[in-house]
Length: 198
Image (cartoon, rainbow, N blue to C red; front, side, top):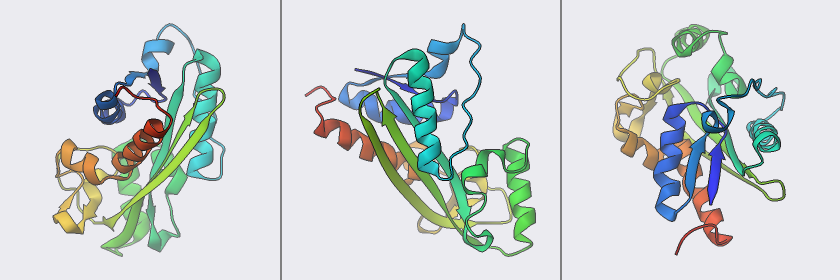
């Protein structure tokens, strides 16, 4: 079985490959199918993470006709009523560093700030739709720590490890992260349906 991960983000693709290839599911990124096509990004106008993940999965399936798995993830901060939430990737209108700086600015010195990473992961194959949700709780801190990870990882502090997500290895992160846990949940769903090699 082959699944297309609806992203061009190589960090995310690596996370998916690690788990799915263990059960015999081949994983491909969007670029493998869209490299010769001029395909615009889908309009993520859903009100929730799940809605946006489903929009992406259906959009890419309709184009390439291969089962698609898409996630919508982001960081939610309690003091900001859940912001940036579904707007995490485009919070400042700039890159990852701009987003982190904008978040810290909006917190106005209220550190550490309780926060959680959310991941809604959706599978769509033209007939079946499977949705799973996972979260990981921590704090946003007012300094960047670590060189690994991406997005908000270097300011997302995880108390049980006494480290930010930017200070832990990918293997450590995959075991505890919102996306890592969602991937494991999806693998379990696939196993229930027999989508794996025994």
